[in-house]
Each structure stands twice: as structure tokens, then as C-alpha cells.
Length: 425
Ligand SMILES: *Cc1c(COP(=O)(O)O)cnc(C)c1O
Image (cartoon, rainbow, N blue to C red; front, top):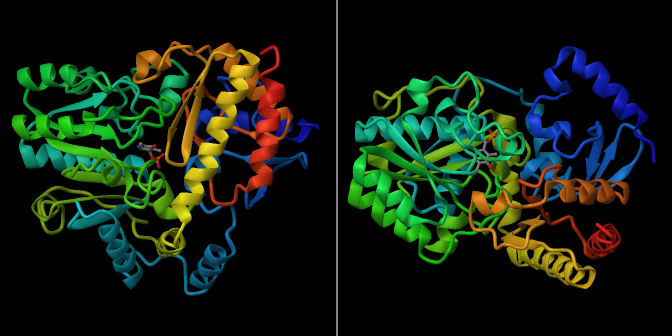
């Protein structure tokens, strides 16, 4: 199995694109080796420039929950493309996707669409600051909310992978307004809220960006109570979890009602879509109905809306999430069983259709726990899996994404590869 062409393309790309990639984690820096350059993807399979085929567990970092190039989504996009691909004017498609979104998330009365998760969280924070007339925000160590300045303080995902908790270029004066608490630790939140006027607490629905970590019973509802008591808005960033845990996200699973919800990834079905929404009184502060400015040349793009509408409609078919969660649970249990048999210390955390294998003997409930994972061991695991034709996220601090296209055969092949790669790991 060669990777000659991919290596060649990386050299070429690196001369004209920083690091050769347009988003850092793609570069395989955390695991070594050269990233695969992709030619195409169909169903559960992804094909690289060298002609290798892999079972794909990245799924474009979550959006491809139906599998790649789903025929119904493809047909809808192609039909939409024949009517022109961008108008910079409102369309009925935006109403359709907004209606579907509000149906899935009863905490929202209104929603505004943007083109990425970053735009959604960035705008949600601006709105919360305007609504509360406060400047400070609170986030959790290891949670990632996109790359807006205020949110790049002790962030997860790529920022965690590279150990750059605070990105250069973020003004210290701005970073001072971002407080960090410990995930699953309400006391750490209370201490900050008691002493500081905080506009909003932003939290991932079920964190996936320090690897998958699940909220302890009572954590999210406790957070909601603390926010109310101290006059802060609760922003649930469900960009990853929104249509992953169930149709309706972590807020439905855990029974919490956030003030603002952020969406992305699955809602665009692989096209650039993000969204944020909440109570009418908050949302009506947005321009042009209110004074808080927010805009986007390509926001609500008709092709992107079409992909989102079609994806959400397919996800609502009966049994969808049962199947997703069953496949994911089979993988997780299988890996736990192999780890025991091969004496590999690890913790497998699952949230709906995503999971992470942490190479540590400590339960992982927050970022400090996650950081105890043996990253060298993860790199060996990743490399062996890739050689066996399994394409995993190239970092210990990311989630594996399971989709509807992953069949029994994929699961069996994956567990077989895990078994072999855990030998003398
Ligand atoms: C991916 C992600 C984002 C950022 O979305 P982009 O589309 O990459 O800008 C924000 N929050 C969470 C929880 C995410 O997983």
C-alpha cells in the first residue's frame, strides 16, 4: 500500500498553503507520517490519491452521518445547482431548514444560519454579551468552540493536539475576558460566577474535542441553574452533538434548556452551514431586527440549505439513531473486550454515535484526565489501523464518528484491525 502520491502532494501543497492543509488536524502532525490526499468517498469508504481504500471514521469530522455521497442528498444538490448556486437574497429553502431546526430544538424560537460552527459560536457570544451587557465569558478547559479569538483560550481539538492552549495573536486584553472552568466540576463554575459578571457560559453538548467526554448526571442541569442564579446565559454548543447523540442533541438527552444553541456539521450535510438560535427576545436583538450586527455573503446558501434539508429528512426515518448507537456500542464494547484480553490500559468513552479510545487507566471526565493518555501509544495504534485500512482521526483528542453507512462487515473488519494493532502495543 503506497502513499507516494499523497506525500508528493503534501510537498507541493506545503509550498503554497501553510503546513499543506487548510485546517491543522488534517496534517497528521500529532501522529507522524503524511496525511492522505483524498480523491473520493462513497458510503463508509474513502479513497486516497494513491488508490488505497479505507473505512472512514472521520466522516469529514462529523457531517457525513449518512455516509459519503448519499444518492438522495447528491440528487437534491445536483437539482438545486441547476437553478444557480448563490443569490445573496432570501429563499424558501432557508425557511424550510429553519422550521426543521426549530422542530428538533424546542429551546429555539428563532435561528440564524451562517457558514461554519465558528461563525455560530462567535455570533452567539456577541449576542449574549449584548443581551446581558456584560463582557466576560466562561468556557471549559478542553472544550473547542471554533477559532474566534475569545474562544481560543485553553481550547480543545487542534489547539489541544498541538499543546498551544493560548494562540498567539489573541490580544491579552480580550483573553482576560475568557474564564476557564473544569468540565464536570460545578464548583469551579460557581467560584467564577460568584466573583465576576459573566455574560454567558458556553459548553459543548457532549464534548468531543478533548476526545469524547460525557456530562456527569446533574452537571448540565446544575450549570443551567447556576447561569440563572448569576444572570449568565447558557450557550450549548451543539455543533458536534446536535444531530449525533439523537435528533435534538444533548439538550434533549439530558433535559436542559439552553438560552442559545449553536449548530453546525451535520446540519449542513457536508456543506458549509452553521446556525445559532434561542429565545425570541434574545434573537430579535440581531440585525436587522435589532442592533447586534451579524452578516454573511454566503449565509443560507441554497446548495448548503438543500444538503441540510435532505440530510435532516433522512435522519428522521424510524430507527436511524437506534442503528447508529447500536453500531457505535458494538464497536466500543468490542474494543473494551480486546483491550482486556490484550492487557492494553484504555478507557472507551461513548456519546451517541461518537467515541474515543483514551490510552490511560484513569476515567476520563475532564481535560486533565484526557491529558493522562499515552499519546505515543495512540500514534502507534493510529498508524497500525491506517495500515490495516481503517482511517481514524489522527489525534488522541478527537472523536471517532460512526455513520449509517458503517455496516456489520465494516465493524467486523475494524475490530479485527483493533485486535491486531493492540498486540504488543
Ligand atoms: C467543529 C466545532 C466547531 C467549529 O465549527 P467549524 O465549522 O469548524 O468552524 C465549534 N464547536 C464545536 C463543538 C465543534 O465540534
